[in-house]
Picture 1 (cartoon, rainbow, N blue to C red):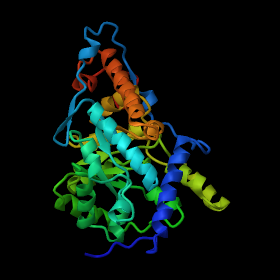
Picture 2 (picture 1 turned 180 degrees about the vertical axis):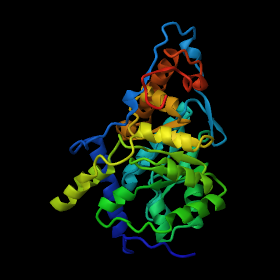
Picture 3 (picture 1 turned 45 degrees about the vertical axis):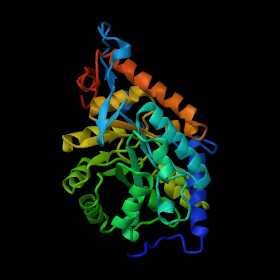
Picture 4 (picture 1 turned 135 degrees about the horizontal axis):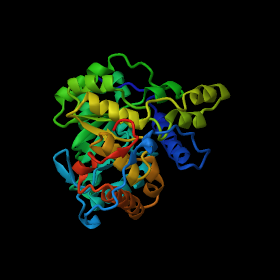
Length: 358
């Protein structure tokens, strides 16, 4: 097997640098430094027609859906989060316990350090023991496919946590504005196609906050990708996050030029759904409430992911995560109730008021 090459060196300092960078990311997103600027997701423009006589029982609204051969209690994925190894281990345990308690899916953060044997960050068999009945999605960066990663590394990511699918995350903008980022993306599409054809689990392609276009989604699905997570603009701006980490004013200025770059989440969902009518579409990128989840589903998402909005809870305890997502589920349930939707199929047909994409 070809040994993956990295920009981190071979003396152990690379792992420490990555861990410190990941922990910095969490601190910035949590707001312990200046809050990164946000661009509108477009979801606020989606307004439901109120149903004043729903003739439903709020408690009996059915939010269940199928994903990766398992039944979810609600159409939610705890989206990828990360951090330095010790911090990540705590966060991942909290998320796994909460996902199991709530009956929702869990997508882990990048497994790069764990794959290269430098620290697990809680990304091991303990994760599946904490969440035995829900879908778990493994995660590696598509950029690593250009640095020697292939089927062996992908399978290691899947097997170490007993995952039901593998996320390949796309972050070209973040890499471009990050000091020492991986910026040679030639041939990555063909390597994604090869993995999609060669893995025993589905491949999910996910952006990290700048959105996926209809054209790219169509090409990826044609190449064998099983699901698209649009991860549109309006949530965490990784260009702004990297600007906070920049050590010199020029690099910071360059990163901030792109702080509002990307396809807004609402636009990405509508476009990808139209381009890929039978593909599982995950709506994420700045979803802050159960009402945003309802809006995303109405626009065409099958499931919805949330990361930054739940990060503070994840850093605290499993109980805090459960409390956060229980509120999201209740808000989604109320949106169904007040549109006269007995289930998710009904919500997808709910009347809208002057909403683009309706």
